[in-house]
Image (cartoon, rainbow, N blue to C red):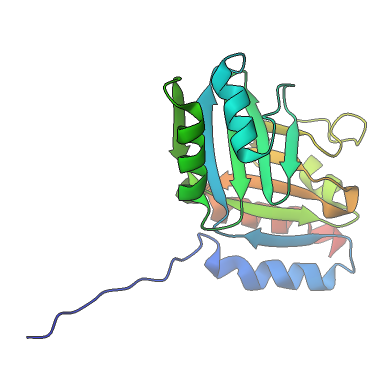
Length: 200
């Protein structure tokens, strides 16, 4: 009897919403751009920000972990989000999980560090366009004005009654990343499409 090899292609939690997101983007004439950025690497890191491991990990990643609350540091394709005094989320292109985990653990040596691959836990929505802030403001309690939440800022908050991490991208035209748990991604996509209706 022949051996059977089962292979599976990963499916994004918003696989079924891609066409609707693209349609809203096409009809908004640049006012709103909605898209999923599936399968991004997301690694949660916890360590003592004042300990030797923080500097060693920063050197290994070629990126200093942000120490100011709710800020973002980028170096090449790697982004570090401040989530707490001893917690960061590293975001990178798909497939970088093991590389990041290995580099962090090796750099930390015997120092206490927690490194957890949470890539499958969330997906990322891109919200961009000239009315991106207006769309998010419909259901987010944050002050999203550029003076309060400009490029290089991030926050754990709610959007459309869903827990998310919102990241203001480097340039205003680049819009926002909205990181949402996979189980709530469909609800949030529907909410964003509804919130964007007046601009489409």
